[in-house]
Image (cartoon, rainbow, N blue to C red):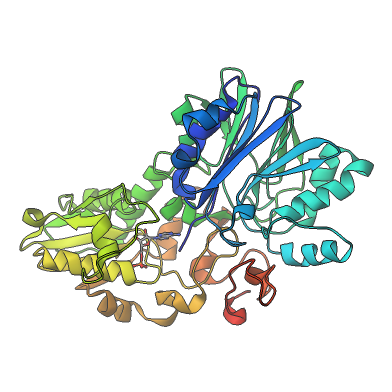
Length: 475
Ligand code: AMP
């Protein structure tokens, strides 16, 4: 599974590019494939984008050559469109001499149809990203409707998930789809407004968190101040519960709650639902830490550290030594031997996707001397793919869609396996009716056509990664 996209933007700050760089740095967990920043001095716009991690793309020299007080940035991990330089965001276009930039987190489920119509009437696209249709819709409408109305109308036509930022010289706009799938927050640094996917980006730059951008809301910040508009009345609110389970950083406030606290509750609930007789509770670092702490506190079993994690593993790591079994896992995690010898261990992780990593981790624990391994997962079994911004494998690769819990236990090699129930999970969040849980239930908040995920690809052209057609479980 992959995650997708962090966005950040700032209005009227003398160090706009540097602050945006720091914001993206704090949001690196939301996407490691590519990053980019667009900065404007009010009339001239500069863009710098690249493949890789934020700190490798933006050197001191690059940032120093990006003057301007207005900026937006983006971290990407693709869910639509291929890994090619033309697909790195922000997207920047020139329209009647004005630079228009856009950064988008989420997935649009009707982008393929819109694009087809636009191309039929002569539009030329520069990328294979769903995001680009928003720009085309906007440019067609802006002359007759004016900027704000044109954005609102363009956004009304797209369906799916968007938390997005747009920059028009000295005007910064933030908008969130009426279902509120992905997070987007508003903050203030001195007198400069900021937007970010998560509040951890505000913490790093010393900004104050003001509030969430509401589902269906568009906030426009210009030299006159800040104004809020309703693009569409909020529809069935469908915040992504996976933000709490895995994506968001534990120190962020997402959908109004601190992520770590929600995860800890999940761990406590898990301990009540699936107790175990054990000597030690250990997390899979880092994803299981908060839930493991909750499990330990609720069960009274001591919390311990069973692994050391190497945080410096780059995505481009080449595996030169094929004879080292399970090398990808060993590169990242190493069990601490003295701690595990002869112990009955509760191992806590946030989720099982394909089951392959979990199997390797459990085998490392056995090698390190653990006597029993009781595997506890702080989410229900993931059985259905996501179409709203999380790049899940196709259904048949999700182990829980084809295996029972007992079969999964056997496959991963644990002594026992317990998943948090859906009811248990929902009991840990405020306003549980406001969450999308389609990855567990298959009940999608919007109708998804089977082809949705496989847009923009034409035979023989390498413009997107295709998956088989019949993989969606829509309802
Ligand atoms: P596996 O055993 O191969 O299913 O991998 C399970 C691990 O994948 C868990 O540690 C999860 O934290 C992690 N995981 C869950 N969702 C994602 C995601 N979207 N991207 C990367 N890793 C994920």
